[in-house]
Image 1: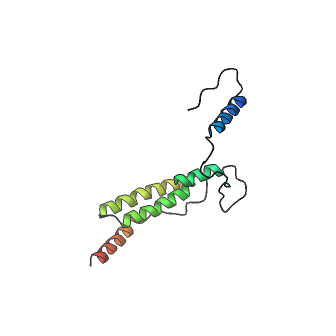
Image 2: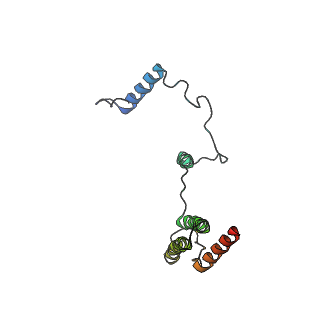
Image 3: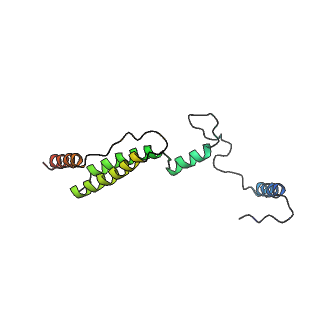
Length: 137
């Protein structure tokens, strides 16, 4: 833990002193990646948010426009419905995603168009039954 900046000392000289003392103690020796260039992605043009993007990639985070996020959520809902253990669960999953789709259809946010309409619950349940019957026989 570093010490607090003493009153009356400028931040620059205080920081410079801390760096100089850390170098003297050898705290900058044998650091991972020392002497190697900073990693760069396929796009080497300057991006002032490069570090945020790398942090988000490391953390597995993404920020999508609301319509694209809902498209992904709808895809995931169909997958979950296909793997559901009961018809009741299929209906619940599709009903919930349909409510979100309808809400976005009537209150469109900025960004690309949604391009989705609510799913036919009976059609999804019929497909689910057919897959179940096909796998059981």
